Image (cartoon, rainbow, N blue to C red):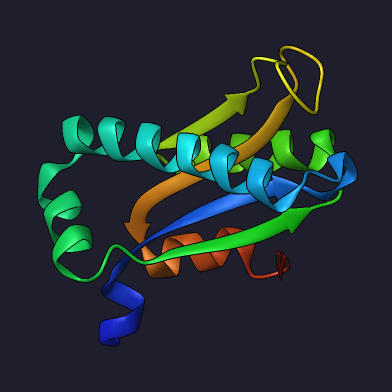
Length: 122
């Protein structure tokens, strides 16, 4: 196994059908990253420390729609990975409760890549 495959990473998956502004997308991704980080600290503190010490790698990817995001969330959960689905409060661009972003990880990069290799960067 190569070093890059073993290094922890986080994936932030955004719904492109919502056409979020860059600022809104950044904030929604931040919500996912913070929640995943907090959950991971409890679930796997050693992996968390490796992720933080290795630069806290994150990738931002896109899916077509809600169904694709939910399917990916289910696959990540079935693989035992930390996930967080962001539901917007609805104060600005989308209706309250709209699911905008899925965070996955931190997890070994190979695990993230296995789930997201077909997705394109945002």
